[in-house]
Length: 223
Image (tube, rainbow, N blue to C red; front, side, top):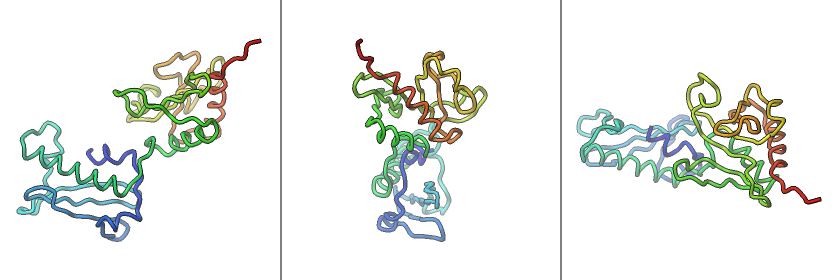
C-alpha cells in the first residue's frame, strides 16, 4: 500500500493534524482535498495512527482505484498516483515523526542500546536501507544488527514480515534457542542467533543477550 510505504516508520503527532487542516469526526481525523484534475482525496487517520486514503472522481462521485494497480500505465494514472504520494508525504512531514524501526519493541531496544552502550545504528546498504548495524565504539566490531525480513526465514512456515535482531552469543547460543530465539539468519548458527522483536520475549531477556554479544565485541587486553 502507498500509505504503508510512507507511514510505516512514522508516528502520527495528533496535536498537529487540525492545524494542517484535518477535521475531527468522532475518534478519527479526516481531510479532503483536490489533488489532480477532476480528482479529490480523502485521508483518514484512526485513533491508532493508521492512515488510509481514497481518491474520488469528482464528476461521478465514485471512488477511483486504478492508481493502486502497479502495472497500470498511462500519464493520467501515473499523475494521480504521484499526486497522492505528494499529498500523503506532505502530511507525513508536517504531522508525524520518523521512527528508526517499524515495531515498538525494536524502537525500545534501539533506545536501550543508545542509553547503555552509547551506540546508534549504522545503515550501511543501499539495497537494505533499514538494516541497522551496531558496532562497539572501541573495537568497531559488530555486536548486533536489526533487520526487517520475511518471518519464514527464521520461523519455518510463518507468514508476513518480522523485525529481528542478530546477536553473537558464541558458545552460549544453543542455550538461548527457543520461542522467540532462532538459529541466526544469514550468519554463523554456532555463534549467532536471531531474536524476534515482536514482544515474544521481554526487553529484559533481550537486554541480557545484548550484553553477552556486546562483551564478545570488546577488545581483549594483551597480557
